[in-house]
Length: 276
Image 1 (cartoon, rainbow, N blue to C red):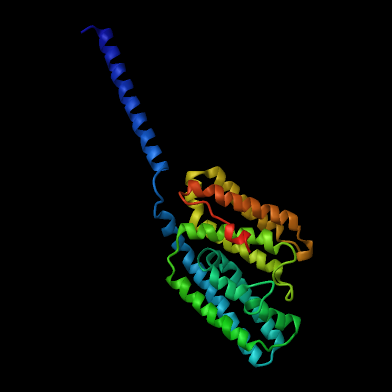
Image 2: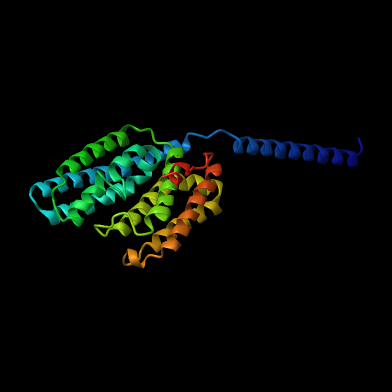
């Protein structure tokens, strides 16, 4: 066989091998892109449970302390306990928004509250009366139910994404104009704690996977969370730019929706919120 022919044959063989390798890799990538959701995000969601459990336990303990202060006719002590209980509750709303919306309505309905936190708030801070024992007992009952659901509910990546997106939407659409906790004057703290909850859910459940699959989108989403947090660092609610907060929260929701395909999840839907 002629030397030139041998060289050509070797090159042809090498090219064929390279083409086969590239074709195989392309097929593998395509298969990975179209693969069904993997359980990895459901596993990652479990990293959120200890923080969620701590938030709900703290909330329940503070509500029980509030009840004790009411029985002692200690109005200021009951007010302080109410404010303290809100921290854990607002941080846990990623879970309640994504998994137990019916309990959210029992615990935290507003502005026309006939039970839950905001009915008690109106008595403690509006009427300045420590006389909401029955409503507090009902709140303790529902928070105890929430504690059981936190323990027993299977956390999923899809549910966590739904909860984070819905809570982000609520911050801009419902809370930025006038606030949620008007009698106590702690509406800005409600929103700050909501953002803390969203950030914790993102960091613990989604950040690593999204950074691996779409680094630019991961950075954009993180930037939106930080921007929202920065906008809520105003001295008080009156100093918050409601339009800016609303715009950033909408952008954050869109970022969560854009992240869904990269995470092999369904885009979170806000249809139930829009109908409220």
